[in-house]
Image (cartoon, rainbow, N blue to C red):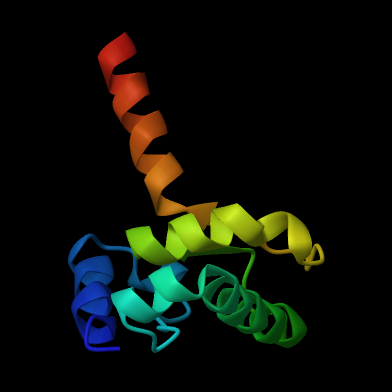
Length: 102
């Protein structure tokens, strides 16, 4: 949760405030996420469900690498909510591969 304002400020600094509806944390610390990856993934899915029901987002970027890994491990266990959930770990790797290819 302490990272929320920092990430929101970075989004604004990069000029994407208008494309971002908000920054939200699941409120779990790293050790707890590692002990209960399904619980952390479920917390993400619940947030995605709320956002999908509100109809205000098309995609969600999971900014925490640990949360991204937990969600990726269990994503197949959650329903399709019509919102694209992007894993920051995979985004980083794909961007690096694309840059290396050029």
